[in-house]
Length: 455
Image 1 (cartoon, rainbow, N blue to C red):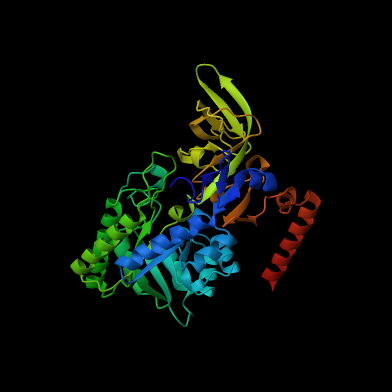
Image 2 (cartoon, rainbow, N blue to C red):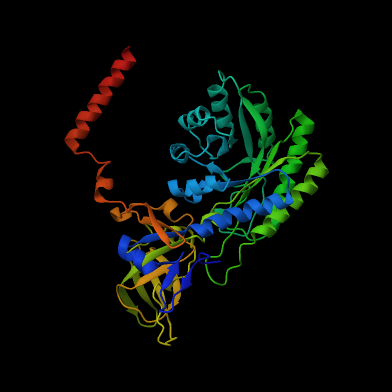
């Protein structure tokens, strides 16, 4: 499922998504443009919800907001019954401002600040996922006058390696994430949290990496976390009410990639949970998983306009688009691979294609979106569609070279809505101050700080 489930070619060869012409959308909203198919979003949510309800009595599906957040997406996630995990104060504030229920929010992160933790506590979110000793100390101070304890999970580092890019491995011993089980840090964290009256240890979380297709890492993670939970019960008398093996489920980016086996993954996790719960005597835990990419990835398509062409005989042909690493840094960051098709494919019977490299327009040699893709003949100004662009592209978008971040359109049942407008010069200038004004405002702030300090 590289493309959204509603993607199809009309009789004239033009690409349609959700019953809407992609070319018409580009003409109306410009390019680069990100198009999301609402039907795909909802179906992916429902696949996880249904698969889990079929195999485990107490489950929760939590959308990993780091994959991408928008107000419109949060509305869909909430309607479909998913919870939300956030990894920063910005994501938390955004979710709350958009009306997402605080009682369905988990807060992850390896370096939460005191201000972020204060905001989480003030919002009475469902749980904070503790990731280090310093965080326990901060929470102990912040919750000392709290009437009801804050539920927390401990993020464990289970020491499990997975087959993915090194940048996407998060469960190996040499990782900034999680408290190590084998080092003894995780057990120390349990003891310290139990000594804090303002905290209630509800369970354990682990996440070993992302873009994973194999079942074994998830099964091994479940076994490891349950074994630890059983040991902590025996040592400290604390029962694990919630267990989470995290997320990281892979999706297809190119036609030859394997299909994301949501149902198989869910069954494997549920079966492993049943076996491990019986083995370690842990009764009816809440089982939580955190899909992100596999909810939004295939729902999104990036649309670009083709521009300059550079042929290097015997080497390759570069074709540049009007976007690139400012809206999708993944290929430059860790070699992520994509495919692409012309928005309007020839229907005159010509089947000849040629290999080209799709380059971005930004001032970096590494700004290459696709190393090699076969395309039929095209002209400058034609449109190019890149599928599986729904996750981590916009979430990591920047203003490099002062690029305007793209517009985003949601499509459903033949209708299209602009849910994020394209950035403008005014947006970029809004943060800027002329030097004279900056001096006046800074001096004013400094004077007020001195006055407050004196008082």
